[in-house]
Amino acid sequence: MVKKYANRRLYNTESSSYVTLEDLAVMVRAGRDFVVYDAKSGDDITRGVLTQIIVEEEAKGKHLLPESFLRHLIGFYGDSLQGAVPRYLEYTMGAFARQQEQMRATVQQTIGGLRPFNALEEVTKQNMAMMERAMSLFSPFAIPPAGGKDAAPEAPPDIDMLRAELEILRARLAELQKAPGKA
Image 1 (cartoon, rainbow, N blue to C red):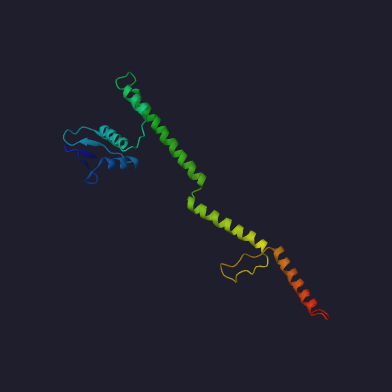
Image 2 (cartoon, rainbow, N blue to C red):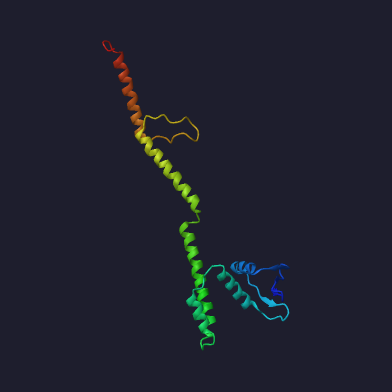
């Protein structure tokens, strides 16, 4: 419960503290319900305070309500349909809020709960590992670093076979160079 005093100050009886319209806007966004009473008369002035919050948000440049909507809304005051407008707007805003929640849930499921930077980091690591493997195919004679976590991944079997053939060729070349008549 919030009380509004003659000096235009708002007092939150729950927290025993004065609050601002911005504080009440935060409460609304957090889904907290409250009622505002005029401290002197005891009248419920919640609707007026909520409207005042909207006016202040619009004045800050956060234009949520299009002019055409505001003109239509003003036009309904005194109209024969005036009684139906609040129920219609309440129903429409409720449906919009439900659709917004469904869209958030769908996006969350699509992303799979991964934070974008973690996903990007993982993809980057996978791409780097793939590039290192590909580059090792073009330099099969490179000596991998010794042990530890920085050691090169185990070579595929065909690389090992090529290395074995290379050693055989080196040995034969060494024999030919040692043969008589060869310098």
